[in-house]
Amino acid sequence: MDGTTEGAATQRKTSWKKDPEAVKANILTVATEEFAAFGLSGANINEIARKTATSKRMIYYYFGDKEGLYCAVLEGVYATLRRNEDLLDVQGLDPVNALRRLIGATFEAHMNAPHFVRLVMIENIHNAQYLRKSDIVPKLNRSIIENLEDVCRRGKSAGLFRAGTDPLELHWLISSFSFYNVSNRHTFSTSFGKTLYTKARQAQLKERMTDMVLAAAVIGHEPKSWD
Image (tube, rainbow, N blue to C red; front, side):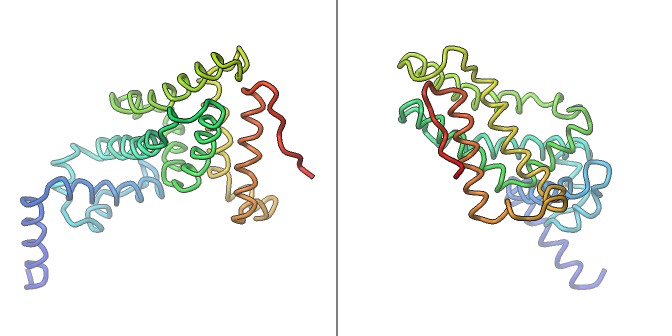
């Protein structure tokens, strides 16, 4: 072992002892990129270890195996998305504006988190096999439904929302628009051009989506003209 390699190994070993949480966070950051790029089968633990500040042995120490690391990555991307939603504080807004904020924030969150979208696509290929192993993700996902339940309850009580407005259906609609915008970006752009993916057109699409969801939930809401 030459001096450079030995020094790097010593520095890694010291970092494990000093700040194991930072080491785990570093592993998860690199692993998120690798799994999003290559999927569960294509990602390589040796490559992940090479790009981190630790070793393959320590990755196994913290996460058990490759599948354990993949599950931790899934939990991490869901946690980030839900945490950002929880910071919106929609309880302080009237129900219509609360729903408007949740719709817009969800669209932007997906647009800014392509890794999340790719990982969800990959997990769907696996029929949610690994997601079902998580005790954390169902609890994380409950928060967005609780937010929408509160908004719908207040909207109906105020006579603003349609009686049949369902929080889970709203989440499905909002997620569908937001997810497709990212998941099919490359195929859509290749087929029809990149017109919809300019900054201005993305902002316009967010407004269109918001209008359509509000029209489904809010009594008397009239979408803006497409002229």
